[in-house]
Image (cartoon, rainbow, N blue to C red; front, side):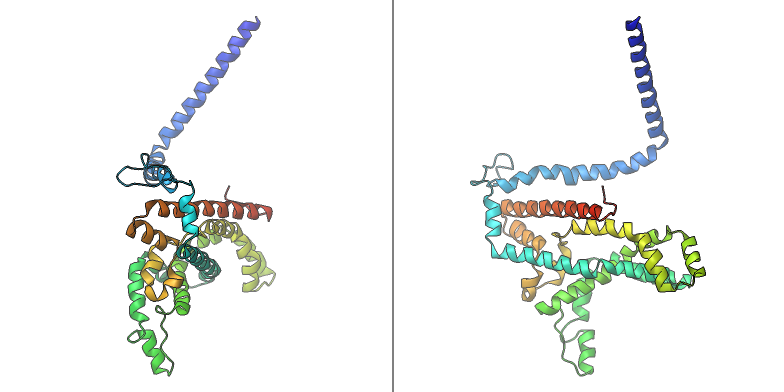
Length: 323
């Protein structure tokens, strides 16, 4: 009798499992369009992100392009190219410049879309608001090559519109892109101009999710516009701010190649040379593939550490992390 009960229980479990599988298949069938849509990004990440990760072993090998990744001999010592990188004054300079420019971007570029989103939300005239949003979004669709070309024309020391105007006003022309001190400020300002408008989209979406009754209650209590922003809008979008801040911290050792490369020249290399341009120069131009891979691996590992630390700190402060 005990055996029959056990067999019945096993049969029930199989029936339940079969029913769950059937429900899952029905769910997939009913939402097959969504699964097809997500299939392409999955294929993209597998082909162009995960499969290339197998080549990180190049950082630990005396890589020979003709022998290939796996036939190339291991470096002796194993961390030979990491030691070589940190022994290079150029790499140390590029590392410092990367951190410095990212800190400036964090200070100026990160809060800019928050401020712009709040300002746009406060606009009462809807048509003007839409036109303003369109104008602010447009720079995002310009490549940094185009932006650099425009900047070189507008900010040229002799013929640039800005310096011509300064000269007419009795001021000395400013070498915006040809002097290390001025280049950094120009780099950050152009970054804010290019990204602030587009990045407002997510903050505006977060603001629309705030209960309008809170604003109405504050209006009844006689709260000023600034107080409504401070006590309702900012707390309402704080989870979004924290999430994006954590993701930004995960990119503290990454600067996109196109922006510094397009805006820089040999006069400002001491501040414009970052890890991405260093890797390009060492890996592509000098064909030191093992060294460039070691630098890229170091960069990725540090970014992951920063991401984890930022997430832990956010949770310790009572905020929601990204996982």
